[in-house]
Structures are given as structure tokens and as C-alpha cells.
Length: 179
Image 1 (cartoon, helix red, strand yellow):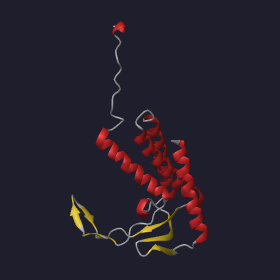
Image 2 (cartoon, helix red, strand yellow; image 1 turned 90 degrees about the vertical axis):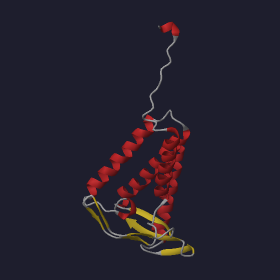
Image 3 (cartoon, one colour; image 1 turned 180 degrees about the horizontal axis):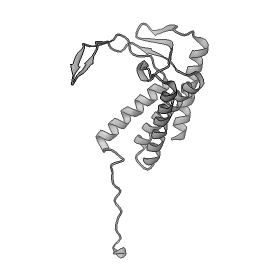
């Protein structure tokens, strides 16, 4: 599983380095027309550009989340290979984006797809007022983001099909000579 992590982190960092050194911030290069472009953006916030007020707290939270993933990876080390690969993907993505945060103070994103338009009208639910949400182009992302998303999808499928591996109880066989 370490090989998967090393390969994904390396691929992530190489693609970000190429983007940062060959494109200017905000530049967009069409690859498949308007559907897929390479667009260089820097994300100082969380996923989908959500910003956190205090960068030190946010960095601490990111490190805590990465440690939690490593702990979970350790806890399931004897589980099936699908779950181990999924957590390796998530670990690689966390390392890739944390590396950016330490080096640049923000994450380098460049994969820009126009999947679907989303429109959610404003609504009120349990005293929470939500404004209108419009998404006319998907968020720009990177290899690390794809690794995290792919790993999460694999974990969801695993849990649906196999159940939560942390809730499984190990059954110790009793030898009749021990009784």
C-alpha cells in the first residue's frame, strides 16, 4: 500500500509543479473544448474553495484529519485489499494537499471540467436559511482530490457491501482442549 501512496503523491506533486511553472495564475487551456480545460487556480481554503478564517487552525485541522486517516489505515491493516487501497488513496490525497499547504500556503488546482449545472433555490429548514446556490462549472481540482474522492467512493461501496470494518467483532475460536 505504501507504493500506491508514493506513486499518487509523486504524480500529484509533479502535475502541480508543471502547472505552477508553465501556466500563469488564472490561465485556462482548452483540452476538450469547453468540457475539459487545464485552469491554474490556487485554493487557500478547503474543498470547493470553502474558506476557514484562521489558517493555523485550518492547518492543524488538516493535520489532525491526516493522522486520523493513518490511524484508520493501521486499524484495518488486516481487512480486505479494497479497503486498504481506498485508505491508501485518501492518505495519498491528504499528503499531496498538505504538502501544498506547507510549501505554498494553498493548494494548486488545475483540472477543470464542465460536468453539470446545479441550481438549488433558497430554502429555510429548521431555522436555517439557505441562499440560492448556482454552480455553472464544476470546481477546479487536482490529482490529490481525485485520490481522496475515489478512496471515499470505494469506502462507501465497501461499507454498503461488507459493513463497517471497525464494528466487526473478532470471534476467537475456542479449542475444546482449552475448556
